[in-house]
Amino acid sequence: MNAPFSRDFWHARAAELLARGIDGRMWIDGRREDAADGQCFDCISPLDGRVLTRVARGQAADIDRAVASARAAFVDRRWAGKSPAARKKVLQDFAAAMRAAREELALLETLDMGKPIQHSLSADVPGAARCIQWYGEAVDKVYDEIAPTADSALALVTREPAGVVGAIVPWNYPMLMAAWKLGPALAAGNSVVLKPSEKSPLTALRMAELALEAGLPPGVLNVVPGYGYEAGEALALHLDVDVIGFTGSTRTGRRMLECAGRSNLKRVYNELGGKSANIVFADFDDLDGAAATAAGSMFYNQGESCNAPSRLLLQEDIADAFLEKLLAQVPQYAPGDPLDPQTQLGALVDATQTQTVLGYIASGLAEGAQCLVGGTRVLEHTGGQFVAPTVFDKVHNRMKIAQEEIFGPVLAVLRFRTEEEAIAIANDSTYGLHAAVWTRNLDRAVRVSRALHAGTVHVNQYDEDDITVPFGGVKQSGNGRDKSLHAFDKYTELKTTWMRIAPR
Ligand code: NAD
Image 1 (cartoon, rainbow, N blue to C red):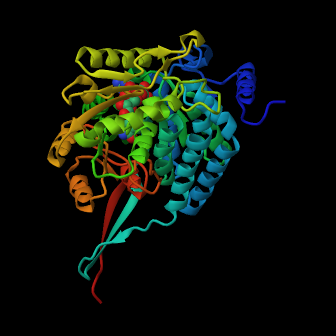
Image 2 (image 1 turned 30 degrees about the vertical axis):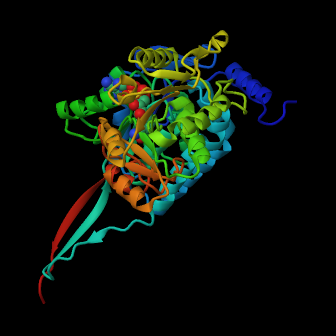
Image 3 (image 1 turned 90 degrees about the vertical axis):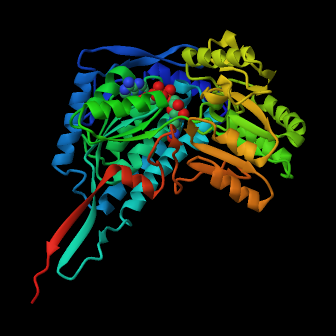
């Protein structure tokens, strides 16, 4: 008998799951379906390179089927026509079903994309379930408006579901990113076609089954796995999709806008990449705390987080002392078996991502940055994708490792002298997702927060996060906001109804 949630426990559960077989077929109209042409692709685990299952390779014909199913569900109002309270109940039950299946979902997530099981279990599953529940609970508390017009008329300003939502999500937080789209889109009464990343399709497919069991009518949620240039592009180009909720790279976000322009001008909301600046001023008195957060936030999820604080800006006077404290943090992020609950840093998503990260490390060295720790692939004998946490000092902001999103455990350290210089470096980026400032000087905290071009600014912390707070970026980090009540703006249309009021 294995101790609950021990390494042996998870390995035994993984073996059981694989022996049972993982269903990689699409989810259309409330049932499993093969791709129309029967094609599949291998779903490979980054833990050891084994094939977890074969996944249906959705293409344009499959997207057509899924969109037709979603449209039919929307038109007959089997979901949109339910009262907000009835939709709330189903979404609460969906969230409860996810919690009940938390071990299976956590295991699928970790096997599929490499993050530590402890994080899948304690952050990703509960976070995704809370998101679904929160939007369910919110939707019967949102009121519409009556405009302050003259007595001769009544103008109702109502929110209506947009229709069919295409949700295209990445692999770094597969369940959470799906939930950030599904929560508000479903709560508002839309039908959804979800296209998970080809690198991490398993939990999205399982979530769809759980949603049906919880009472979501067939057709309201369809999941079509497949490659971006096939299934993703077909969804983005589809003439019967009203909104695209996209999370992914800036390159693909650009493509989403092109596809909308080439098709039906559907609304596109892009949540894209980042290169967030984490600025520590010399007056900050808890350098130990700041260093622990700088490392923890950077190396969480193997550095594969859009909002990772991947540029650390240190004021000259404290830079050396801070780096010493930072480097003392690094050993606890030594890569390890993702199924071991002690592991803090797991596997990168796949071999391509490993090569990308190693390529950036080589570029940092070639451009003259100094690698203080890491810089190599490790645990190669496992067949898994592991890269050691890496810290570069002496980085200049024009270097590639300071400008481009690496999406791996690689931190770039830059030094500055004055507040103006710190702001200029932080804003010298095509991205604008997150930023942080560490200072005990209140005036400086406010001045710098105001000056930073970012969707979110943290002061003296980096980890706060809540479903009640909007998440998104400016510049090439995207537009629109996930999370909070503001996310309803993306999946609803405002309708004005003018009524003439005749005088007596
Ligand atoms: P990606 O852009 O390669 O892929 C994202 C999704 O788009 C996948 O489902 C993919 O199959 C699909 N896709 C790819 N090409 C497509 C095309 N031509 N047409 C339609 N769909 C296409 O991104 P990724 O590598 O999966 O994810 C990492 C990126 O996501 C990073 O840049 C990260 O910063 C970003 N991200 C942003 C946020 C945020 O909230 N801002 C959150 C998580 C991740």
